[in-house]
Image 1 (cartoon, rainbow, N blue to C red):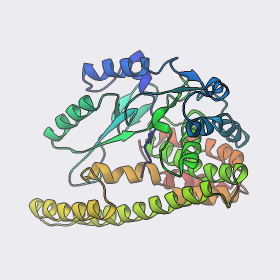
Image 2 (image 1 turned 60 degrees about the vertical axis):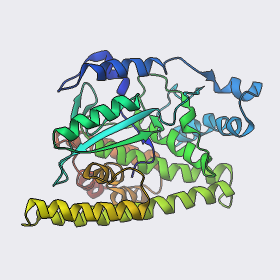
Image 3 (image 1 turned 60 degrees about the horizontal axis):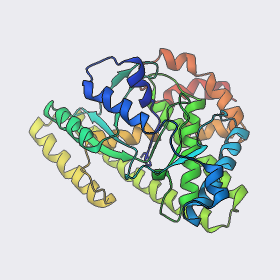
Image 4 (image 1 turned 90 degrees about the vertical axis):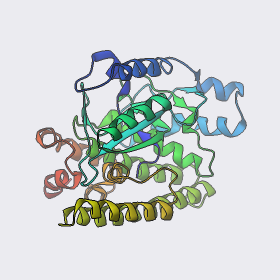
Length: 347
């Protein structure tokens, strides 16, 4: 499952126009929301040197240049992102609205300039997000609305570190490293129209490189590493439960049962899952399909990293080889399928 981050170039939408059936208010809110972020905030170096904010936040922000440099040593692109800190006064930077067919795992896709087809939309205003979600439900879609603490403009703008990216939990350093590395990966590797591949690769790199960063900076036996590991274990356990429900529902949707019975059984499965993973919002097909968007192809990427001798720079070069085929493939193709040819060739 996504851990509160989205790598979509929302800011571009207001600047170069949209394709598809987007309401005008979407363009307006995207422009206004991005404008609130552009060039705003205080230089992180100034925050640290002059003792602004509380001690804990300063200490976490002091890691950001080192996290960026660490990412670059492992093949990530140098960008001018994350040099400023901006407090935004809300729990999420955007609210992500996604939709899916109610009786099959077929996500609704939106077409954007430059970045291609993506299976979600981002709204800077919660009320606008909820209103759009209601419109989609009225059209018969399963819908999911969730807050995201970070997002990427793919290097088109100088993204700041936002107050929403500084977790209050004990795993804050690992989470910050994961987020910065995840979003920087989007500026390094991106295939238009393949959001599942893009997000899954970013999640893989963010998770694994964050662990290495903690090992190098605070030590493998540190409390920060232990807390981040605990978070990872919980996230993986949650993901496994979601996969079980996803597979169970896939079989249900393929069965010959009447529609009404399918919907009744679906409700039982999703409500049981919601209680088990203690999710506050309802579980829908749109919720479950995000697990595939962010967590697909992990086994294959693990094999590729091993073939590359654990070298992420080499792995990125290998991933570049799949871009031509990925551009020609059906949008949102399973990364496992796209990775097979690269794996066959080796690192």
